[in-house]
Length: 129
Image (cartoon, rainbow, N blue to C red; front, side):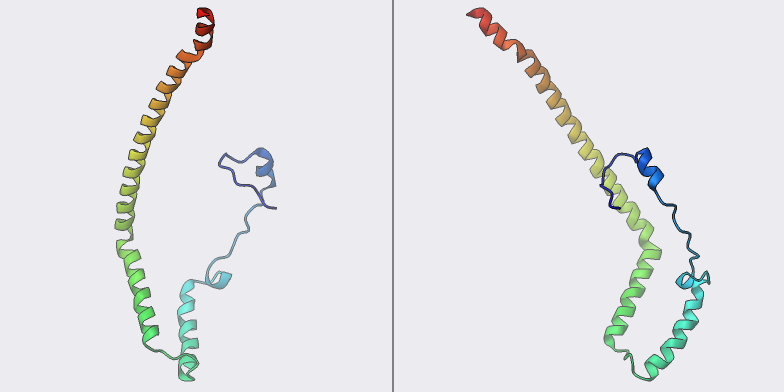
């Protein structure tokens, strides 16, 4: 069933309808085996695939391998530093945004007070006439 998005917390009826998640065995293809078994399986499959020229290793394959190696190295070695830098910038932006919002709220509150003070203007003009 399609649920409508809303930012509020779930209601009791929706919480009762929620289905418990199905537990997965995990591992290699959901078998529960360690992912390390993929390495010998991949090597065993790669030998005939390359030997029979079903897949030709060329410069594009090498470039893709270097790019993947770069991405893995960047993620494992520099991922935390990149996260901290971006998070620090995000916190600074959020702080500036909240300060600007507070100024807008203060200005609107002052305007509301001014408009409330003018709410009796009609009666004032009627009293003059």
